[in-house]
Each structure stands twice: as C-alpha cells, then as structure tokens.
Length: 178
Image (cartoon, helix red, strand yellow):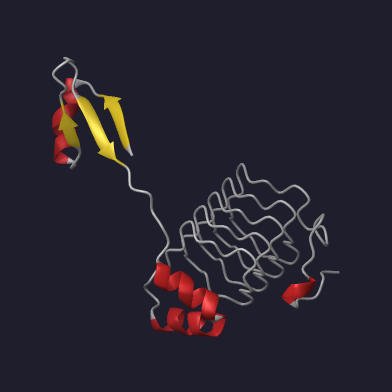
C-alpha cells in the first residue's frame, strides 16, 4: 500500500534524512512523499505456542522476560487461554471472540481494536492496558482488575451479562460469575 502526501519544500530535507522515499513526478511541480505501509502480522511461532499450551506459553514467557509477544491480528477466537501471561503483548486488531481469558495477565497489553465479543475475562488483570476502540460487547469483565486502562471508544455494550445474548461459555469450563 502506498500513500501519496503533498509536502512543502521546507520539509523535504528533514523527511529524506528520516528515511522516507521522495519522488517528484514529472507532471507535478510539487514533490510527493511516498510512504510504504506494511501490514504488521502476528509472530506465527508465538501464536502456535499459545494455542498449543498455556503452560508452555507461560514457561516461555518466564524464560524470555524481555520479549514482548507480537500477537497482532492473531485469530485466537474460542481459545482457552485461562491464566495466560499476556503482559505487554501486542494484540492489536486480534480476534478474541468467545475466548476464555479467565485470570489472564494482560497488564500493559496493547488491545487496540481487538475483537473480543463474548470473551470471558473473569478475574483477568488489565492494569495499564490500552483497549482503545476494542469491541468487548457481551464480554464478562467480572472481578477484572483494570487500573489505568484506556477504554476510549471501546464497545462495552452488554459487558458483564451472563451468558451474552446468543452465546454460552459452558464449554470453557469456567464458573459463571455471581
């Protein structure tokens, strides 16, 4: 995907020094800045490990404390991630629909644009997470800890209703909140 932006000549030198590609089409007197925008995708190995075993995932996190997991746009719909350590993970635009995140650690996680309708976040820790524009419609956030969490523009309609309309978490093996 390429984006063309018209730029004033006074900014040209600064942009070139910043690593942007600058082109001047012959038909135009005004230079055009072309920025290649790459779509970021989740680390496939990390997604596979998380889906295979939460215990193995948590051990990997313990063994690699400096790694911030890249789960961008990952499809984890319906996964059982009970107790998963997802602290500081980038879950931007991930699909967590009907996912069991009971007691998961999502401290400082990037949840921007996440699709988590009907997700079970019972007793999850979301402290300092960014859930801006997240879709948490019908999600269960009962007993969740969310200190300093950003929910700006998030969809929280019917959150904490049990079970969400047209949905059941009976197959997740987690108790319904009181």
